[in-house]
Image 1 (tube, rainbow, N blue to C red):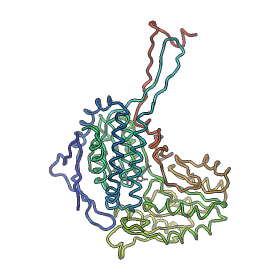
Image 2: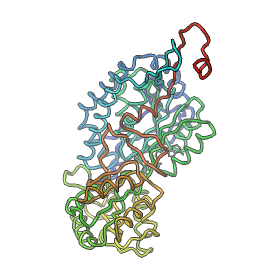
Image 3: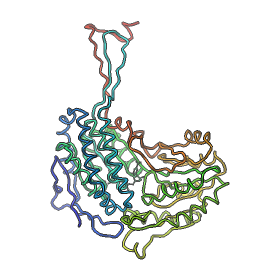
Image 4: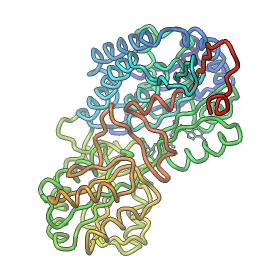
Length: 496
Ligand code: NAD
């Protein structure tokens, strides 16, 4: 049964103000069945949500941090009880295989417990003064109203990465989920309300990115934008935030390489590559899309890879044996296939896959098989550009130095992976690979909530999500200087 998604403004679920708003219908990408619908909101709905968040800010800021943490803990407890229902919905709303959908919800639960625990941590420092009778310390304070803009590929986990630390630090929030996964956004919002987040502290508005997202970015009462999505959209947002001097945290695209050296455990590398290239149908920001293999083991590994890829089952995410679920929508399917055609035209050799699956159990959905290209060079677009689908480019490297240079030859810098049995070389590679995340003898995916997550170069702008570093993104530092000497003490003058 299809469910309506509404906006959450000041604790009330409501349809957009515009009574003639356009309807958006979301269908299961694996079988075409209707899952959810909503009316497209407009700028006035964003304005109402921001006004509610602004009004709720002082009381929430003054709520003790451990208390805010307790409410987030309660969110995790509720999500734990609803894990299966939310996971089933995720498989229908965006196509992810059920085991991965459960993992997405588990990540959201873990993030709740982790951030709740951070609520008891001291974030400031006591600083010794050069002068007598003077006390100095720092504390972290909230920014105000934060605008959170998220993609569809981790539709429950990513909203928690942003919302929980924002709320823990005393900010209030206006959240815009991806259009494709708005019902999952609503399920997340319901958990927050049930856990006791006060009216106005967390608001949600559903609609198109170019209208709702843009209105958040340009709203003068939004103090910070936290964005996860494509590099193109993120850089556009950053350009709009710059003249407003608005803080912006960006988590964007990737073109993540796995490097396989001649002494690597090839079986281990194979299973890691199959998982990190084809899990979530390649639609992960950390997905591996380039495998750089030492020439001594290149042919052997390529054969293993093609045999392995051909065995992976493609089907509706609800079937337990589906390794690859549906691609999120038709536009994405066409984009993936367009890149495959470009690869062929550029002279790469198509080893397997390479065309949408349209028959039998795949007839009603958007399915693409695991695809492998060999003979890829650094000049090709399939080497350079993010495809965000199950397409893997295999590149031959002459040496360790050549492999690292190829891995770093990209505008992105999210995740890298290095396979070798040489411990010294592994340490060297961890220094020389240019990325925010570097895996040794493991694939490019697998973030945990307590580790800093984010990318270099055109993947990010220096902020990190996850780990203690996320607290910095959602707060500002105040240095407090208290002089109780009863006289004017001149630093650098009276003490010299
Ligand atoms: P997208 O950029 O199309 O959309 C992301 C979000 O931005 C959506 O909510 C969308 O509605 C909104 N948006 C679109 N136009 C906007 C505008 N002009 N102003 C404000 N908001 C706007 O990305 P997507 O297709 O949803 O997600 C896939 C991309 O996300 C990939 O590039 C992937 O690598 C990236 N991603 C990155 C990470 C990371 O942590 N680095 C994680 C997941 C996904």
